[in-house]
Amino acid sequence: MITTSQLRTTGRRSLHRMLGVIFASLVASAVVGCTGGSGDSFRVAVIRYQHETCTFCPGGDTEIEDWTRIRGPLHGDEVLESDDYIEGFVKLAEEYGDFELLGITSPYEVFGGSSRSWNSEASFEHFMGLILDDLRSKMPVDGVYLALHGAMAVRNVPRPEAEIARRVRELVGPQVPIVGTFDLHGNEDEEFLRWANGAFVTKRYPHYDAYLQGERAARFLRAVMRGSYVPTTATRKPPIITATVLQWTGRSPSMDIMERARRWEAREPGAYVSVFYGYPWSDVPDVGTTVHVLTDDDQALADRIADDMAEYIWRVREEFAHGEFPMPEEAVRRARQAVAANATPIVLADYSDRPGDATWILRQLIDQGVNGVLYAALRDERALEALADRDAAPGDPFDMEVGGFTGPPAGAPVRISGTVSFFESTELYERTAAIEFGDGNVLILAPAYTQITSPERLRFGSIDPDTFDVFVVKSRVHFRRGFDETDYAKTIIVVDAPGPWVGTTRLGALDYQYAPIDRLYPFGTPSPGVGR
Image (cartoon, rainbow, N blue to C red; front, top):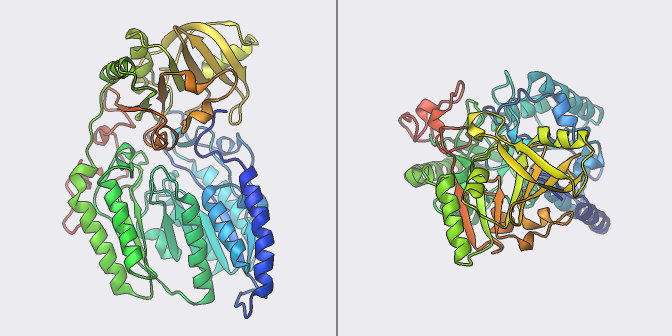
């Protein structure tokens, strides 16, 4: 079924949780002298509030109804089964056997994900009210775990994740440790660690290690609650901003930056080194690269590591912040050459399309006569509505313009004449359509920006992804999880878009109002003193 990388199934997680509970009960029976703050266990609140916000994307502010369209807020154990970071945290907590986990009412996900614009202040206050009311009802607690993203943007709230930590701190008091986990695309500075005791950030993109960061957060939080670790922090912000397509950790220098962080952690017991690469399509004051270092009561070491990391990132800034990719016409020409050379399957990764309705590649595929294409997926809620109005069914004819409706960045609508082969609800959407057209081509229509991360997500209805030569995906890096790093696709072509649009590497063309783009490399003049 069509889904995003954010949508997780709960079957595997529920099984792990059940086995963890059994194991934890055995461990707990053998625990001697547990030092938990509430009887023989630590009461730990688990909160989830995540959004990667594209403030330059069209469509208006993200409101409460956008957060509840997929499903309502999570409650209790639903929170504990909702996310890979949380899954790792819960699994290790259960193995320790001295955690009592309290799932706190939390919002689920935004319909449209990272294609949605500013969160309204009203929506933020609404969900923070739910979170804090539920947390208050479960007091006292011995610790708090915040499963965050880092790139949320909220009207009139400059640093939302830090504000979440501040409000939680205000409620639980100064002695209760707070830890957060983050996506490496987060925009953070030292403000979060002013209110929280620790932060753990994924070191891989695609984010294979979200589960691992959850485990690390549990280990850290337990040590702090037991009094065996005294969190000491250092933060640096190398003045660099990069487009996310350049942040793939399968290639240098991004690979080398994260390896340097792991090397410090291996050399210095008790040191944790996290790097945020930032999310440039959030127009916020703390946008860009950040280094967070945690040590056990050793400020000098924390500063030394933070300085080293910041200086290294600055040294490799030129390669890290620049990259060139073929425009659609050239990219499709290369795809034709790869087909002729039997270097298939081929992935054309439409890296810059944030809203999801860009048609540049579709137009070129048709104009250049490429066949055997599975286009997954084009956002067009209008076309889906038209199909619903006429009660469309497989076998019905299809003839209408699709895509290209959010403005110049999306290109122009493209007329598709073919046959409906699928029109049903899917795991994520109430309506999804598949249209057969041309010679062996299938166009998938979705009602929102959809990032496909593996061929298996396309195995639905009569579609067999293994029969196609060319895939078009709306993705920068996450598609590599299932198409590239599994060796499924023989040819990978990351495709640019004409024009200085949101989503491209040409960030200097965007109208930033709050981000200090004029002081960030390579689009501005950094201030002296790298990262300080």
